[in-house]
Image (tube, rainbow, N blue to C red; front, top):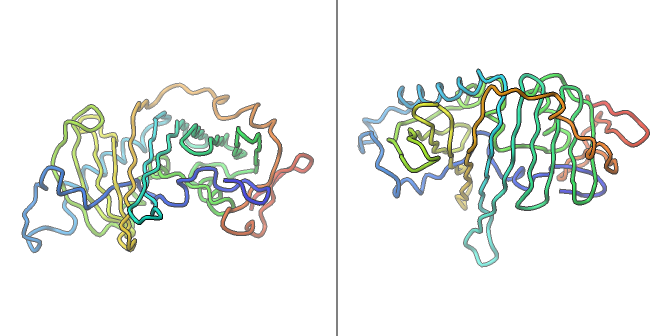
Length: 283
């Protein structure tokens, strides 16, 4: 999204998605019935089996030195007549721990490219040939925090990329229960778990054998419209060889330079972005 000659959040979904992934409580009535009692008093707030499945998935992701995955995000926005409309975005995500990330988003919506090589971040809008470049901290976790701070750049699949994926869930976990298994999501058998953290209710499908997430649906508890968000993962590749050159782009670096800035506010104080003649430094 480009405003006032600045490159802020290049992904439309950045302003509407939750940190963990996505899910929808209302759709549970159409899914297999939960493998728990209907008596609310008998259902533990946090079921150990559900926690074990979440931990196993998070540990599998945290242990991967590198990964590549396709992430398709679907999210609802209100329409003028009232009922929500659904929009979809696809991203090709490539990661190499601890300090390299590439996110290519060809559509729907404005195409965008994001590169982080351990020293700088580069956000590129290929249609307009505009690029913002700034120095970055030496880890993916720290870089993602800074990118959100000074440019509102946020990826719905952030939790799978951080060093400790389970920590973000556990810190605000108030509900978790096991639902059952599915044989139709992600082309494999998955375990379905529902949980709530930081005011977001999530249903997630996790591969029974490989422990990799295949789909998640979420709704914000305090959203009066109860808009639904969905995240689908496919084409998982873990611990693959990735050359450092994958996390840079000569074409993007050659674009017309513009500063980083939040699309919803003025640039954060103390942030200097790279122009054509002046090196950048973010603080």
